Each structure stands twice: as structure tokens, then as C-alpha cells.
Image (cartoon, rainbow, N blue to C red):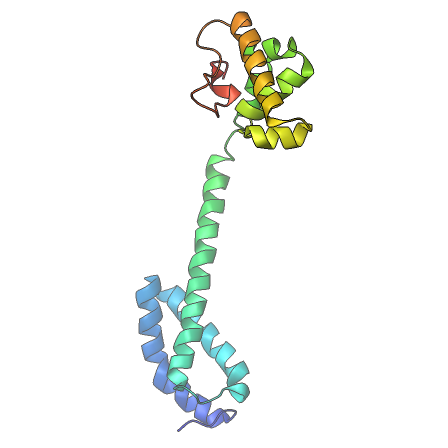
Length: 183
């Protein structure tokens, strides 16, 4: 029986549990040196908490929990180091252009800029942001019916300005402008 806070009992626990803990952590990590470090760290933590240990479970189970938590943290750190090392060797990935910026210079945006602001706003809110007529009505302060009429007018005017196939059809309510062919 181990008495919490008793240094001799902890020493006895250390000698009895160390080999089993080391095998357990080694099996988890697959690295002898890392396993030894994690087990030693677990015993240091356990010794610091030994006066507060409550014998509601076996001390070895408590040590296993501490050691396995240490192994999990070790693995997490190693993964982060691997990513850091990879970035150091290969460099940071290049910046990809934002799809919304490729639309800005496109034909669709030029055609939208020729529309009255209210028609263009309704069209963009619907087909670029994917809002429903109800959401557009709430955002612009008009009725849903007015939103529908503005969308129809915008579609009609844009169809005249753009070549066929450049305008989202009414069957697909959410077609981002970047899919208009300008991306």
C-alpha cells in the first residue's frame, strides 16, 4: 500500500512502475529516447503531485495517465516540428490569387457596373453571395416581389450585354461570379 506524500513509498512505486511505463510509452511513440524522456517527465510531475494523490485508483494507473498524456503532447510537438522543418526546407507556399479578385476585372463586373445600382446589388447579393430573395429584401428594405423584379430586370439587361453562357441561369440560384468564365 502506498501512502500519498511519503517519499519512500514513491521511491518504491518508481522502481516497480518504471519498466512497465517505459514499455507502454515506447510502444506508443516507437522511439526509445523519447519514451525515456516522457516517463522521466511523468515521474517528475507525479512526484510534485504525490502529496495530493488520492488513492481512489491504483498509483500505477495514475502514472500511466500522466505518462500517456506526456506522450500525446510529445507527438503533437513532433508533428508541429515536422511541419516547421518542411516549411524551412521548402519555403512557404505562394499566395494564390483570391477568386473574388479575378472577377473584379472581368466582363461580368463591367456589365454589372452599367446596371442601375439597385439591380446590380440584387444580382450580386443573389448570385455571388447566395442570398435568398427574402434575405435580399430584408437587406435592401424592399418587398420580396420587388427583389424578384429587380433580379429579372438585371438578368434581362445582362443577357443583352454578355455573350451566351456567361450569365447564371435561373435554374441555379447560387452561381458565384467567379464561375462566369473570367476566373
